[in-house]
Length: 312
Image (cartoon, rainbow, N blue to C red; front, side, top):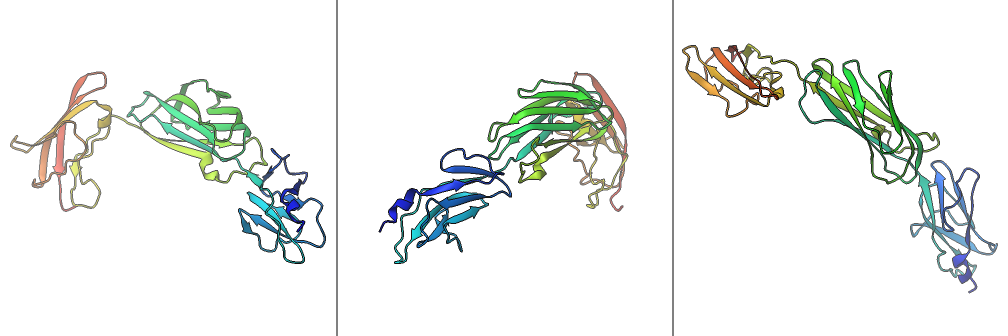
């Protein structure tokens, strides 16, 4: 038929905005860009059909096709007698993306004010294109104090004026995450909300998932022991159990509760886990003894009274 020669006659004409093809049969474009695929030495008496991933593209029937989405493209020629050539070789169009992802996580350990703990920050590029001059920033809130950080394996990191800045010269697509370990401490009891964010140094690179460019960690800094003096176990979700703030800081504890005649009505089986609701007991005032052992092994005790009210 004279059409089989078209099997190898597809060539690439690239627009100026498109990067140079990496191989003879692959071309990379930025999102929003296009690439012209054409038959070499087209015959005006033939019609053509273009395919993407082996499926015909509707309306793509000329010797040239403009591709703007990724895919494996092929073409076949059809003469006036409706004879068809073989499909051409595959030409792969790759749309360049760089999906930067940051994760920040504080140490999974209970800490009190001025007690050091660590943050681990990881950054990676989970798309198909290397990203240059990536920069991570981490602004410390007023209730968080910077202590130190380990030098990262890749790039440089510094702390100045309440902010960490980590610059990575090139974050390779698909490479394992890069890690920065930071030591800090909470200044006062309360909740520390801390966000790290990452951005590309190349504004022309599209990030398909900007939501993962930020990562927020919430860290509770535990204060002194605080025992409420009333519980109301009525099922409304408020004060239904005896919740002792600060008990998490102690490696050992035990809670005993006594009625007004000195009889023990409750004792925690091991460490108390903030779950006593006065089940089976009448309303009234009860006496408690809370024994504590600190992380350093120091023993102490807290005593007081708790009132049990059911119809509030």
